[in-house]
Image 1 (tube, rainbow over the protein chains, first blue to last red):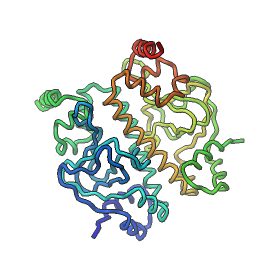
Image 2: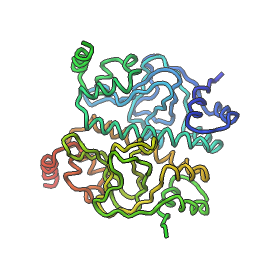
Image 3: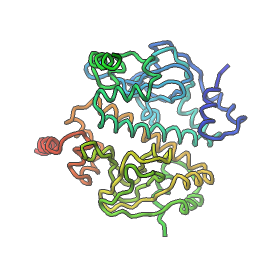
Image 4: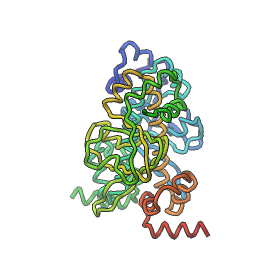
Length: 193
Length: 193
């Protein structure tokens, strides 16, 4: 039995869809559980799915020329994740996505989404708002990347995303912030003491 | 007489709305012309408008502590621009937007947009797709910022956005790429010769 409730609650935060209509969402989604370190998406693989995170935490990354994984983003409960360029064009992913803990998602394919939006076009209002929000956050993140020193980037992350600090491995947070793990360790010591 | 046609054409690229309905858009928009260097939005000012660029070119920037303008983005014909975080919350803008040439826009307020989407909810499909596209481009830009050297960033920009090279002042492109103007000048010489 599929538990669509977390997604329904999230939809209701952003738009008014009749409750009896929201129960029609279910057939379009697949409920999946990924173990810690399992892959949701692999770079190079055709990407035709997007994921609503019901429980858990993922990181989105690409493999650098030197073989090191560069984390671009994290996501937790109530966030959507995918390689959206590849999802939009049904093309090869340029990012990988991996579960950082046991992660439950509601997964929808591009075809199913198209069908769903034909049957329930009012869901476009939900997607409009959440993508506007995501894009607005990206504008702010570009500003932060230009404006803040490395130390300030860490403090900003700690202030705005405290939930992630406990859930994300330190070396991965360092990668995301553009640090070496050693440098992050030094900054942390400074602000703990 | 308002010329809504460029926006109608753009909508039609992304979704199917009956042509006679699209003509109803007009009352919700204001047509404005900005002279070169005129401001569309000022940092600190309440932001309750977004802009569809009919003709022209703008840059979005913030003022650094040292008083230098840091360009975060450019936009030309058929792009939407605003400080979307501030637009969403009807709050003070953290960015400024300035016309780089004579720029004609279709401007819509947040209130008018809400009203428009109530009357023509099918437009949400359009905004869903263009924000998904904008967010997808942001994901790729984050990757580029981590992955590419300064020289590669310039070459990537030249390859992907040739239209901007002619329209954007060099010192501003340097700022956008995170260079000094002198450094950009050196790179350009290298690739022109």
